[in-house]
Image (cartoon, rainbow, N blue to C red; front, side, top):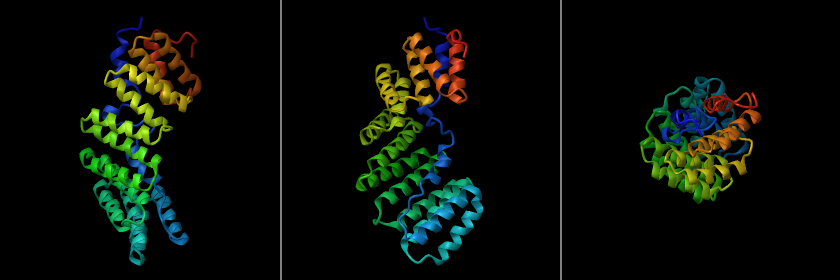
Length: 282
């Protein structure tokens, strides 16, 4: 029998927690997301400037902000102006000036206009993520919705899935878990191969005490990414909550085998201790 005393701890401490908007494996996702959005429409020279500016922001945010401002003075097109605002916004995120970053990303989106919906979608998502980083999840919601719409116009299904996940985070943070369930459904339908969407869906289903649904979703996630320790950890917690101690132990042990030095493995060891230790001695 599963130790009843373990249940509250398992429920509260398991890795990713959609009910507070956390993301598996990326605890600083809100601040780190904009740097990954480096795609921009540009001529080769201008693309090089943007790339240089984005790289500079990772090393010295104030230097990148100064670069963006100086570049803006010589920009000679709306597309180039958008890129200067994009880079300035990223630098401001690194400086934790989130409200200013939101304004910069929004300016970039307005400057790019209707010429590139995929880039515009990324910029809207940056506005949303800056709002999330500032603790303003409600303000982030329309930005993620706008990002999804532009991604759909651009025919970018995988991109849309990522933005739907962002919207789910914001919905959970604003106390709307059922709407978050629907957003994650959109993410899975847009990109059925997105293991993260299935993982977050399983975690949210578990937290809503829909264990059968959670089990189906985590199995699908495991098929897509069988060596992801976050998926193995969640599979173990779902099994534990369902009273399947043998399966829970097996999942926690697999996390340790696959990624012994990972944070997930450390958590799995704690859960195994709660279940009476790891018979294999890992």
